Figure 1 (cartoon, protein in one colour):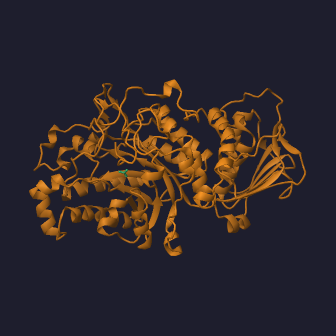
Figure 2 (figure 1 turned 180 degrees about the horizontal axis):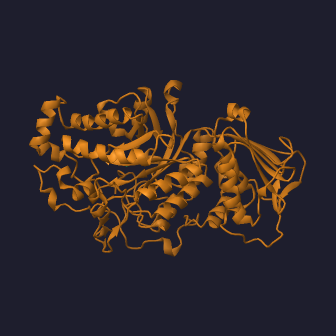
Amino acid sequence: MLPELDLIPAPAHAECRAGAPGYVALDERTTLDAGPGTHGTARWLRAVLGAATGLPLADGTGPGAIRLRISPDVAREHGPEGYRLSTDGSVADAAVAIEGGGPAGVFWAAQTLRQLLGPEAHRRARVAPAGHDWDLPLLTLADGPRFPWRGLMLDVARHFMPKDDVLRQLDLMAAHKLNVLHLHLTDDQGWRIEIRRHPRLTEVGSWRARSKWGHRASPLWNETPHGGFYTQDDIREIVAYAADRHISVVPEIDVPGHSQAAIAAYPELGNTDVIDTTTLSVWDTWGVSPNVLAPTDNVLRFYEGVFEEVLELFPAEVSPFVHIGGDECPKDQWKASATARARIEELGVGDEDGLQSWFVRHFDRWLAARGRRLIGWDEILEGGLADGAAVSSWRGYAGGITAAEAGHDVVMCPEQQVYLDHRQAPGEDEPMPIGYVRTLADVYRFEPVPPGLAPEAAAHILGTQANVWTEVMENRARVDYQTHPRLAAFAEVAWSRLPAPEARDLAGFERRMSTHYRRLDALGVDYRPPAGPHPWQRRPGVLGRPLDGAPPNV
Ligand code: ACM
């Protein structure tokens, strides 16, 4: 039986040899012939495909080989992440000939190869009987991504995601050809990264005594203490594991709002002339905390220390970008603070909004002086930005349009379309349903580049990102449920050159999804089944926010 050609994301070009019902089989004699720059992918193929198929995939050349090469021609035509994959002998005398525009292109081709081998190739050990042939259809594919930034944001602050689960997410991202993991590491409800010079950030800030169970209006509490953090070696491991999969990790340290966990650890970071910050603990409910950082030199120096360690853990070759949050900073405490008022006077920034912009600009310059680029949520635009800064456009397209037109790079992640915490169907059965109803089909129809954007501005759209906020996702299974299968639709939007939303072949995508669900089964993903949640995926009696169209933050 030939495996179906149900690739997700869809490749740019696929040609099956005319009239040829033939196939090529991978078997015990299949070897790996890895040219310069392709050894990382060879290692991945041997480890992952080798485990799933039980094939040794020893080193060796010849007509039975999987041949991996870097090709300047492919780079020119399809970019460094593009590839050509051929099983019909048209590129080279090999069972499978892969040519990547660069090492990443070779790796994405290996992901395609795994999909071509069938769902069983996505398991961690063999289920096929010994002697099973792994058949591939005779074809040539030429492919490359639409966008260089195909991101997933994981909020590991609201609910901690243990390191092993992050590594698994990286594998799932790789399977969907996504290449940027944005880690939301700090928030009111938790601080998740070890900072050596400020140990209380994790000693105190990484756990809370209890958690709101459901939307913040829910009367229920989960009384189990919640916490966890990544040691610096955990972070190094995550970054290296990602790099092996051609994924960059962008760290986010959120300032000056969403900082209550840090203030609970170091009360002097807060507005001490307004409230007694020594009484604060890590926040146990959801929303936007009024407890924000004080606009003082001490706070700047403290966070420079944090960022110095962050820059070391997330080197520039992995990602030049460092995310500083910058969203949702309530100004009430600054309005009530004599210190903040004096600062506004001294800096001549006019008001509290000017103060926020001063705060962001400080880190914009600080990062630029260290060869790095600041990225922040679209609120950071409000005070004007330095040249290299980029914007995550979350409150719709508007921030992204303004930024792109002003010459800033943009990652489009509008809450109306790609916030995967939002429910994926109407009705009572969705677990803790919040936000808009955004179905698989809705995500498939998402267009990252706003219509009418001039070409020079559109060139600033680096790509797009799906955001997974975890207030109502208490564990990995809940994250899986909210993220999949919609991540498959998102991946195709980010990778493939789809036509305008109304012209997209939704039926064709859904047909291919029937195979993709079997891949997700093999990968062990707790996705939302098309017919609705399994009983154990429901959360009966836990309040969500049943108003469609309401603002997003739980
Ligand atoms: C956000 O959703 N506050 C970026």
